[in-house]
Length: 128
Image (cartoon, rainbow, N blue to C red):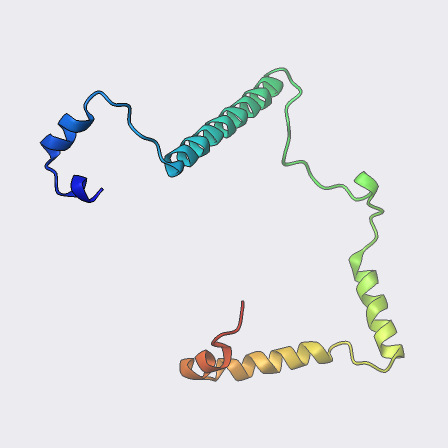
């Protein structure tokens, strides 16, 4: 390689003219990735054609169907009832269900009044 580095382009062309180019492992990996991408694109195109064909035949796919409670095993129970039950249980245990919310709001208000430097010091090195 050191000898080739000092050769001119003409000398290199003369030396390797007619020889098959050498492939590196990186080039082989790139070719495999390109082939996989082409296959994925072909699969996606086939799926798109199938959806279009189904739509033309009247059996189209409707991704924007309206949610109806009780379908797909849903029992339609209101989540508000669950929240109220959790609050009632917390009150029975003597725990204020809103305490953590108040603590979080207080922490956010304290951070809002901090300078950028203070915030950087506080969160520097912490994972998101």
